[in-house]
Image (cartoon, rainbow, N blue to C red; front, side, top):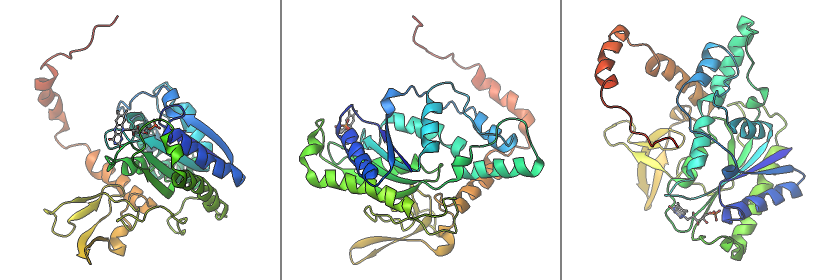
Length: 328
Ligand SMILES: Cc1cc2nc3c(=O)[nH]c(=O)nc-3n(C[C@H](O)[C@H](O)[C@H](O)COP(=O)(O)O)c2cc1C
């Protein structure tokens, strides 16, 4: 069993220390461990070229990204791992920008539903051209998220970190939020947090050891989650967006997208989601397949007036040239 640690923080900074402590816990229970510092990698932003989606859904192929950089390296590490310890410092209330870049690059290209469709159509049609999707995309993985901040400006950190592993369909089995830890190494004076990180690494291994069948499926019970329960009953997020204009669903979970209602019971806010609505959550295959259909039928459906587009574009094509720095 392999547990990968990804640290998005400084060398030997607070995040790296906690990720290493979690990896020590995992190793102690028999896992093979490895650490990657995300800042060591050259990762370029997604350009939105959609080559990955075309590869998966039109060519029934692997969905590989066409940008040549270190994505291949980290993608291989993620594909081969069974467990993940993902740690990020909190920058501007969220995780670091490089993690968002990785999340975008691993987004549609690694969406497990898109990959399942690609495999199914390839097999049904007997397609032999191109490369098939990586079979390792379909195994369950347990992930622990550790967000580390110097203050309490933290609201988007864990939600965005959780979103960064949603397309690969990892089971979030723990989330840790650490506040007031600014100077490098200062977390070492807080024994309870160090212990908590170790427990997290151990828990990742324990959840994997409990699973005999490692194939992703909505039918199976999800592994035990030991982090703070949060407010969303599906993904334990605490971040709920209010949409009062929607009479049926005035509240939506910012992470898993499930819709429901908010009520205050005994001075505590409760987010209630019906069983039927829960199937739409993006952490389930059902929600991911639904999203695929939405894209096909709405967002990516050619407009009947498509021939008029070049003319409508003229106005914007000829307006302004791009301001760019001089090339040295
Ligand atoms: C650009 C930048 C933005 C930051 N923004 C926040 C923030 O919004 N909230 C917070 O709690 N800490 C913030 N911090 C503090 C870091 O999260 C904190 O120092 C943390 O320990 C860094 O992790 P590291 O030691 O693993 O590098 C910020 C630090 C930097 C450099």
